[in-house]
Amino acid sequence: MKPNIGITDANRQAVSEQLAKLLADEFLLYTKTRNAHWNVEGPDFHSMHLFFESQYEQLDETMDSVAERIRQLGHYAPATLKGFLQLTHLAELTERNNDSLGFIRELLADHESIIEFIRGNINPFANEYNDLGTSDFITGLMEEHEKMAWMLRAHLK
Image (cartoon, rainbow, N blue to C red; front, side, top):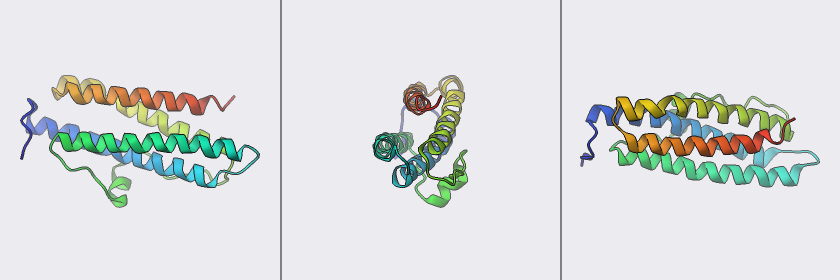
């Protein structure tokens, strides 16, 4: 059954398409953060293993909320690796050594890329697509990514 929530079908479609890209970005970042958790090495292994775990757990919740928002708008969330790789703005892991600083730099760049993508959609969602709810929703996601990026950035000099 189609949602009757005061947003046209075309606008719900357009917003859902952008959210699908965001979900793909979140999934790829989640996977890269899991990789860092599993494969980090060095004298800071234990603390970084726990740090990356806290970050991927937060990203897991974020992914779920983005997928659920897509469903609230009456569309299906992408849910295949192939689909995510086609939709994402991010690149798969490029760091080839397993030191924490390399992982941190790469993850930080991805968070910042997602922040920019989200920031670029806040006003269009509200003003062009008449979807203040999703605009507010992604504003909160942007703030979460800003905090996670700050936590990563704090490890760098």
